[in-house]
Image (cartoon, rainbow, N blue to C red):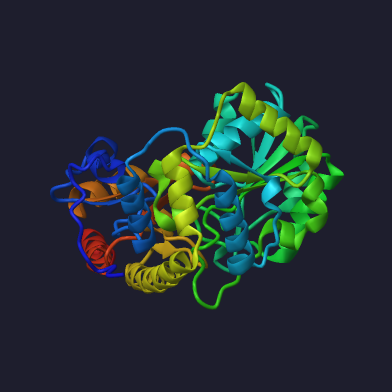
Amino acid sequence: MNFDEIIDRRGTFSSKWDNMEAYGGVSPDVGIPMWVADMDFQAADVLQDAMRNLLERANYGYFTGENEMKEATAWWMKERHGWTVDPDHMSSTAGLGHAIALILETYTNPGDEVIIFSPVYHEFAYKIKLNKRVVHEAPLVIRDGVYHMDMDALEAGLTGKERMMLISSPHNPAGRIWTPAELRQLADFCRRHDLYMVCDEIHHDLVYPGQSFTSFLNAAPEAAEYCFILTAASKTFNTAGARLGTVTIPNDHLRQRFRQALVEHQTQPNLLGVELTRAAYSPGGAEWVDALVSYIDRNHRLFLDGIGQIPALKAMPMQATYLAWVNFADTGMEMSEVLRRIHEDARLVPSIGTGFGTGGENCLRFNIATPRARVAEAVERLQTAFADLQ
């Protein structure tokens, strides 16, 4: 578990590295990509062992093992999150983006509104619009330096066309962990307004020491009648290329409808995703995650401390994830100038905040899941690029 090892991912068909020049105009030969939520670490030994076993079997045909994968997932949720979940309530999808799209298609109609708390993961709005539904933004507000949901404003702005709420927990891009009381408030809101709740918990393993994550159904078990919980090993173990996610639906009727939609779309789990997920959700996987979280915790403190030394830049405190959210509004610069300095002077490629919706206009998201030497280099480059503010 040498997270300090520098791995050259250029030219390996890594989206994060090989597409960075198209996205941010910076060559991977001189730049540091900090945009795609993808880690630069060597895969966990348990994943490598699973791949070796797959190679030794030398059979990539039809397969079994999905039930065992669900059992491993249930073990992980109980062991790591105190959430007792029935494996029979789980369904496999081709990643969580696919899960969101299929849920939208199955339980809402074109023109229905879907509530999201912005700024939030850009794929939420994209999937809603792609399925001809309407994005209903509920802008987050900043109190004491962190995001909070403004439920009074949301209530006052309802149109009556809302059918679903979609949340990120822990929150991407700001690393905020919603409290049990906040989750119960959301559950009550959905119950009163007859809304489905879709809770994306993909970052739930990446929680910093001293912080505590609560799964939505642990906070609000009564929401089981109208709730969908989305989980995956992909963010924790960097297996997004395996395209496998899990949707947990406790309500029998809703679960039957979802599985029928999977049948109609002829969607089935893939061999690689099943093998890697089953391997990840194991004692060996847990040991690797503990080491990973300890490492990125030090990365996040290094990065936020460095940002804090640049006047006018504000990094939001992080409780979880490896995605740092930095606000440049107080620089007094147009974002075009901020990005020029970031791309041309610092040669960094973070995610541009406008893609995350209202509230992201003056922000950038930085991925710090990379060897610490790169994080330190990124901090130094930022401090140099904004030296005139100091």
